[in-house]
Image (cartoon, rainbow, N blue to C red; front, side):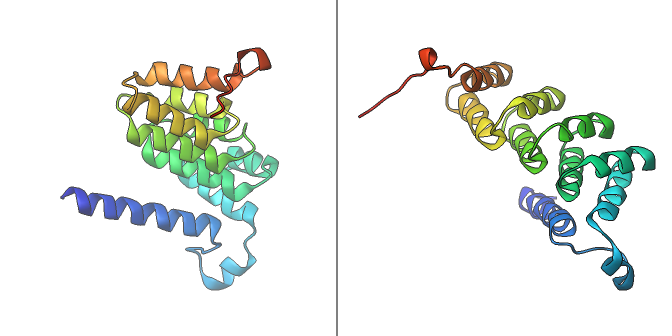
Length: 171
């Protein structure tokens, strides 16, 4: 397959996944889909990702946004080799699981040799995962800094911004 076809298929798969999770579109029978709650959908998605029914039920019952939790786990699982239990552990600990997934996948796709488990841990620790991903990718590509060093630089920048360490630049 050529690269254009691969990208098209990949984007189609993600769009379909997002529409199932966020759009309320379901692959179940129409009468069954109307009676499903976001918790039902979450449990189904997590068991499909490889978690046990009990793990899925516990995780979905605790989630503030069960659909986002399912999205996080499925997206990271689709783009990485990380096991579902590890992904669940990280996606369950953030306020915005969808942003965590986007952070992990963006860094994984736009850098080389990024360890997905390590990247997921850094994205989880960041308060602004999408901005963190932009920082890591830019440091790596434009600053010629290795991925691990980029992860450290960008997370320290976010945690070391106490007033005495803040660089304010005014024009």
